[in-house]
Image (cartoon, rainbow, N blue to C red; front, side, top):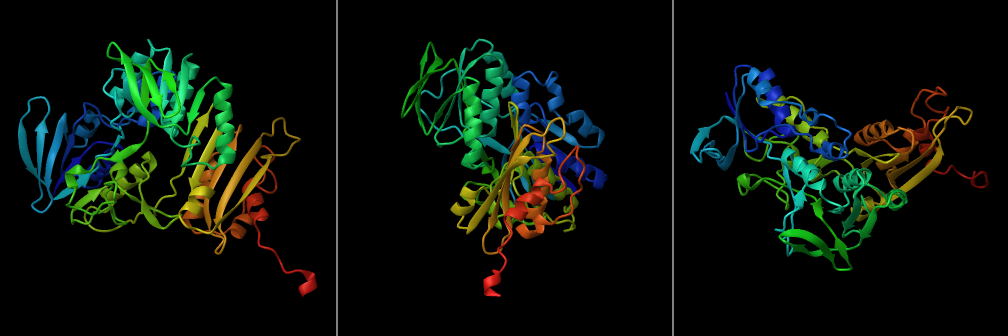
Length: 451
């Protein structure tokens, strides 16, 4: 069996390693256009902020390790065409320029995503950077040494983590986003309001509800960011607007979402037999809405890549879908979220309600007993849990993983109220705060007057 893999991303690495272990007789060839593999891009902000001392720890596999598994890894090789009907791909050696063809029995497409870069006037100026791969991270660190005023465009996870890292390094930082709130895809206003206040208290300037219109420069380097509402000085700009899937190779050959994300079934197979896909190049089944969506997360990627290997010969283990569960630490606040926010649930046309609790996570007689804020979103008619958000100075984010499982299993709020959680004063109270949220959302009982 000849297996060709395009892209040694999170998903690609998981698929390659598991395929090699499950089918040692398979002939596996990997095509990767970069000079490195398996870079954890979610660690860039930690690297920039100096929390990661050895940046090589941000790689979880090497070409040599794949070679030990019998995998042929062609670094600096770009696949330029795929003929899915005849099972032939065309690749180019980026060192020599040589172009050649290769055949496959099974094709695994894990080409990942790439940052969205609108064609702003002045976008070609020096010191306007992206934040995605190993090369980007090194460039950011090197150029930031000479920068005083840094502007980050895009207030998603990467943008927010970067502004914190730059501020901790003593830079003057501005965060720009066209949305009125930071992290608006992940959190409702009662959470983002607090985070925005924290960022501002640390001296970070927020320019929200502003659209970048152009960049201006001096001597070929960026010097100003112009929005529809203001002008901001900038020695360096990081573009973090979002990502789009790298799927041009299969355009018109397999089913895709409008944004180009490849559609796969529960066994990671595309609409074309023997072609599989995983990771940021794919759409995923989103359990809260019960529809496919584009949710580029490393966790989704490694699960999907592992499932490809399991299902390469025949369907064996199905994908359970995702809740888009994620977390972030901003200064002293530990934040995690899963599923839909209340706003996104209503935007999706769901009849959503919510309950929010604020309480000490363990008894007040304990030496410390920080407050936790938990919001759970649920469907009014079915009382099915749709999403949750948590924030605390204490590290309680694993509770969001519990709620992710609840969403996965279509649990209702009244079931959450009475789930069996242990009690020990070091960790919680007799009613765990997850139970408390469920209790507050219990349906009303009949009035005695009506009995």
